[in-house]
Image (cartoon, one colour):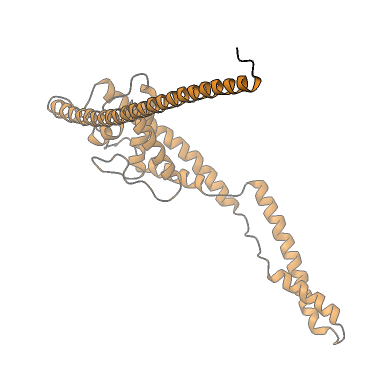
Length: 285
């Protein structure tokens, strides 16, 4: 044991320096090992990502191949069945009259047209009466301008302001009670006609399904060769509306069931968008 305190402290400092260097060396080794391990993990992740990307691309290619194969099978099935199977006719509808189609179209126009309710018509007439009262007062004020004395400047300004105020306003249009009544009748007749036409269409579509008839090409292109499992009623509802859309809007394409998408907002565009979405969903099922 060293009895010299200073020497003992120096020896202790030497040991601490050695221990510190040893710990520092071990930490450097750990950090180096951790960096190598992180690099290795990063490389492994990159390799896995590349493999996953290639796998996804391959799955997409296989999905497209399966889709093409399905279409070929459908086309082949149609050719085989066409020689031996009776074809369903969804284009000729002698039981549906032009008058029914016209009533449906008139009903849709009536729904699209904004007509006044009885309460709104009452308020409009009240506004017209108020306008006429102010207009009469303004006319009287304007006529009085020619009789005012030269020094009646304040009164002249008042009368002129009253006249100018009415000239900047617009007299409301008189509500057309006949239009409201006609639209109400058109809506009722249109609803009745559309129920009759839909019933006739659905009956024929159901009969074609029951007899396993060959659907028209435009029908299969948009709705598929059959109803998805468990969704027969929904599929029939959409199929009925697809045929109805063709009748209402004179679509005759042998391949395109709904024709070009309407550009203008309205009942036709709303129905076209709904049918397009529903049919796409059925084809995925």
